[in-house]
Length: 152
Image (cartoon, rainbow, N blue to C red; front, side, top):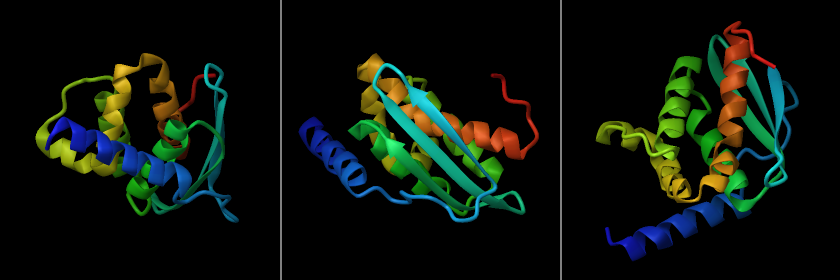
């Protein structure tokens, strides 16, 4: 795929998720939730999950953020909804590795779907936190579900 077409796809997917976020709102019943802030950009995100039998049955997010932050949260929720906590953790780790330009295998890239398009953010270090904010929140929520002590 040419660079121009890839950039058009990036813009199209990111803008679609930012303007029409999936799983945006509040869960009526949730196991846990977490609010994280990005002081450099002003993003505030609240990720909420409902976990049953070690599976993410429902996930939503709300808050205010930039286009990248909102799009990333929307993409993340679509990717992990219905997944086991272990599978969601693998996806999070792949995403976080990819976003900071760590090399990941081609078959692992396929697991990232639309989230792979966010790897362009690595070119702009100040925007990496925008793209990863919701992913870090979900990682902390999974830690909480698994009984891992979260450092303050």
